[in-house]
Image (cartoon, rainbow, N blue to C red; front, side):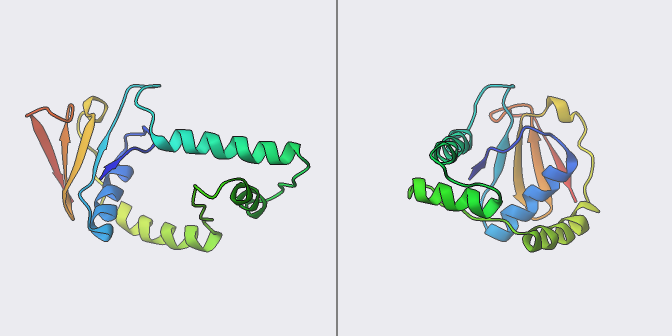
Length: 140
C-alpha cells in the first residue's frame, strides 16, 4: 500500500507509519512529492464532497455541525463512504500515539529523503527517491 498524506516530514509521522503497517498487516511506503505535484485521489474526493455540501447549503440545506455536513454529503452521493471521527476516537488515539511518540527518533537528512518504507514493526528504510539504491534505516 502506498500512503499519500500531507507532505510534512517529521519523526512522529515516520514513527506512526510503523504502527499503521503493523496494526493493519500491510506493506507500507510513503512517497513525498514536490509542492503542487502528485496530488492524490483524496484531494479530488475532498473537493467533490465540499462542492456537493456547498450546493446543498445553497439549496437551503442546513450545515451547523459535523453531523449536518455528513448528512448532507450522504444525501448527495452514495459513492463515497463517510465516517465521523468523534472526540472519543481522538482521545483514544491521542493516548496511544503519545506513548508511541516517546520512541520517535530524528531522521538525519530528512529534507533530502523522498521515500520511506516500513521494513518491520520497529524499522524504517529511507531513500533519496523510491528507486535509489542508497538507503538508510532507522530502528526504534
